Length: 143
Image (cartoon, rainbow, N blue to C red):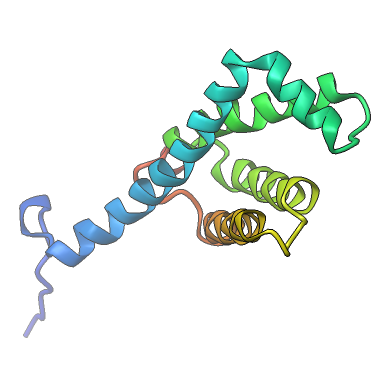
């Protein structure tokens, strides 16, 4: 007597499996969107952005500006396509926490309070990507 196990074809995958495969992609796109929009804003207003960086006393504001563009634009695109996802997400999480501490540290100001904890929450989402990777629909999964 032989026991056979049915194999699942692509057309018979349960909805839960499809959702589990799509969720990491959706999460990456949603998180990256915030960084891309923010990076674009910095790209089209460099003088204003550098002035803001100077106002908080960071040394070499031009370098900080370039680093922010790199993280937000290049990191955002890498996150969407799932390239070096864990490393990119870790760099973005560190950047996001540093941004919270540097730019949104006046927790007595309600607006800054919300920005601070928004950034911390975003870093938490990025750390989930560090822990679990980019998922099936990522360039990393093709290796």
